[in-house]
Length: 239
Image 1 (spheres, rainbow, N blue to C red):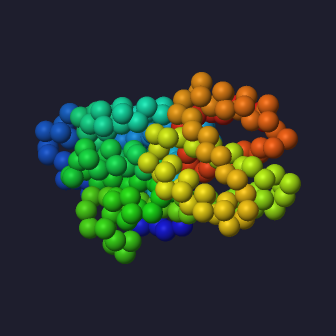
Image 2: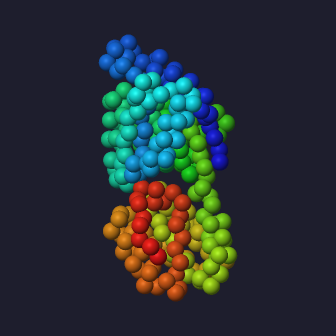
Image 3: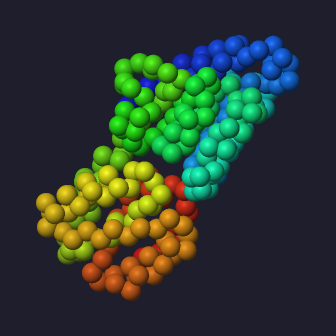
């Protein structure tokens, strides 16, 4: 994991952003605004509570110290630019962008408002930042780099189910990480002597259809969930 900004720095950044607002804007907006831009579904309660707890520990209490504006794309990536613009229109002094597509939309929307992103991708390769050492623009954040773990995930799955020779990799074709990760997995599968079947699904109906197919062929297939690909969907279909 590569971290660009700490919690204390986040609080300082928020305070600085609020202080820099024009007087007229501060008169219209009683509280500083944190904009949360998420490419998926509304976050589970546990994550929301954890986010609020982190703010409280830093001396910021939502509702009394700041206002939190949430925008959820629910997997509709084409909605993200409008949602990012809407946060800016609502006076967001800082935008928290959750995952790569949201971060790109926020970056395209403003060069003025500070953006703190969370991504599983390499932020330099994804063109979010130019260096890991120090922010050089209005973007900083945390990169978990889990998009590089596909080969290890595949090897672990092979150890757990050694008799499975055909592996189904469930990917979201709308996610920009899908193609490079699938390519890396194909290379890893060839090294392990496995056959990798890419199963593309971009909505609930397609996901349900794929799980039905997997159940029909469960003697030959097992599915591999690629981390980050389906954070925008709730998958309930059992294998």
